[in-house]
Image (cartoon, rainbow, N blue to C red):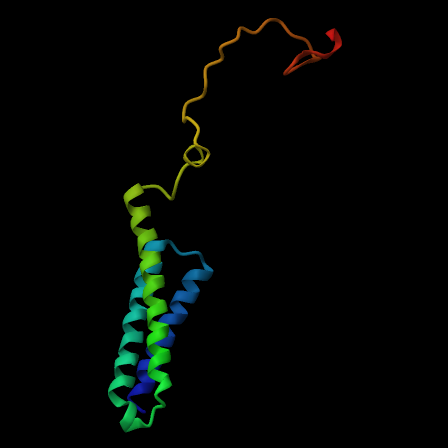
Length: 130
């Protein structure tokens, strides 16, 4: 077990780095790298437990739990890295407001000529003239 402890501590350390990055809203590219590093440390733990389960008396459900956790890490890694790649290829931080609303980026032309108005004019004409 003395060889497992450093593996676990390394994974914990990398997990704390991810938590700190999350708390400060790090960019997706940085998060992708941190999660990839954590995934590698986690994989080392899984391999150690699988190789030494009988010798160290590790219950059979522990390797299964570690594998399931690693699958979740890999899924999260894929999602975060896909977002990082999208941000990288777009060049900007995301869609513009015009993209989201589906509107044109140019200001529309005014088609009606403005006739003189007064303080009481509204969108529907002069309220007092009704």
